[in-house]
Length: 56
Image 1: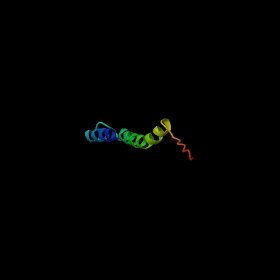
Image 2: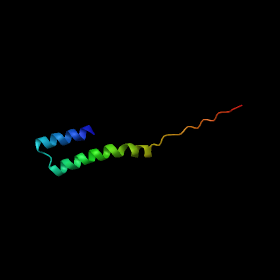
Image 3: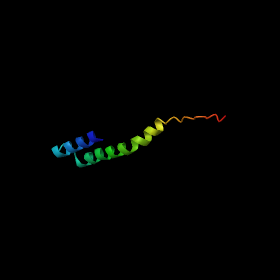
Image 4: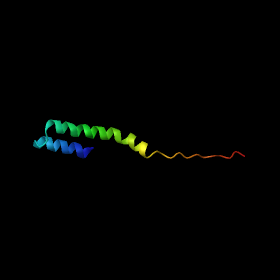
């Protein structure tokens, strides 16, 4: 996340990036920040452990 924002900031300050490209970079940073955790949970689900207690 931080690398994309730094890249966008440096590119914008130096005049290398156009406004639409800067906006696209910022949107991609935001989307990947919020979409990565749910997608990773889907791809790598937590294993459930079942413990049986024998009540004798």
